[in-house]
Each structure stands twice: as structure tokens, then as C-alpha cells.
Length: 246
Image (cartoon, rainbow, N blue to C red; front, side, top):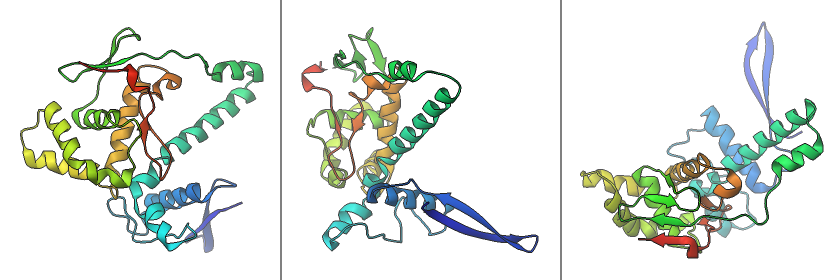
């Protein structure tokens, strides 16, 4: 077993301990994410704005440290997905234990290889509709919507550490769709979301994900929201031939 043993105050004159297990057979990325989550939760190392004062060397070369450790937005991006996978596994185990057959679980979790997607239509009012899915509207607040539009423009994706390069473009998109009149607040919002040392971009990606998952199953939704792995471009994987800008 791998984890932390935390010493607490003595109880009844006896030492008290808490054990925090880590995922077994973790690779370096997952292990670092668990360390980051633990210390953030315990607030014992003074994390501030998503950036740790403590650096963990998880790469073989010094040149890799900045890429792998300092960009907290990129480090945190897959953590939510890992937690979701853990929850799903626990629920599957529970269903199995109460008598749901293995065959039934396979049918429940099966993915249609011939899945049909809807077009994304963005009208002149910057509303998002999916015509082939009963023309449902995907609703988002302005800043997540601006991030969504930015990533739609780049099929190859965007690496989070390069977000500052897209600050001006994202600002122009956001100004088109927001009702905010305070230009300083607009610039501050864009500053936060394009800062790779800040977790704001992950929050906006989560809002985008929720906007689609709330409408239909994740087997479909995953084609429309922003996905990716650490240190790689994050992207929306839907074919851009299905994206229509009116």
C-alpha cells in the first residue's frame, strides 16, 4: 500500500494516526495529482491561486520540470476525469454486488460504434443549437461560451501553457457575447482564464462539459466538450464539417 500516514494529536494519551491511500500502480502524473490534491485539501503547504510553493520533481530532466510541474492548470485538467472513473468503478462494483449480471452491465456500458452526431449551429446571437438532437440549445454563461468558441476555431487544439498567446483573440470573442460594460473586469476575467498558473481554465472547461452532459449521455457529449491529456493540446474532437457559423 502507498499513501500518507498523518500524525494527529494524541487521544487518551495515545498517538492518533490517519491514513491517506494513493491509487496503486500509479504513474508519475497520477501520483503527482494525488500529492497536489492531498496538500491542497489539507492546506498545509500554503497553496495560493493553484500554485504550490513546493516543487516535486517527477521528470528525468530539469528541462521537463516547468512543463510537468509548474503549469497547475495542465496538471489539474485530468484529475476530475480520474475521480469520475473511480466513482464509476465503485458504482459498477456496487451493482455487481447487488446481483446485476455481468452481461447486463456490459449492455449498460456498451458504446455504439456507429454513433451519429448532430451539427453544432451557432447563430448570429451566439446561441448554440444541435439541430439533429431536437434542436436543443446548449446554454452557457458568456466566459465558458467564449472559451468554447475559441477551441472550436482550433481543431488541432491548444496547449494550456500557450493560453497567453490567445489572450487578445479570446478577449475579442468575449466582448462580442458578454453584457458586461466594465472593461477592466472583462480584461481581468480573460487574464485569469489564460493564466496557466491559474485553475480558471479548468473551471470553464468543467462548465462547458456540464452544459453538454446535462442534455445527453456522455458517449455523445464527449465529442462536443474540451478533452485532452496532460502536456498535450486540449481540443474539441468533433469534425469541424459539423460546425456551422451563421
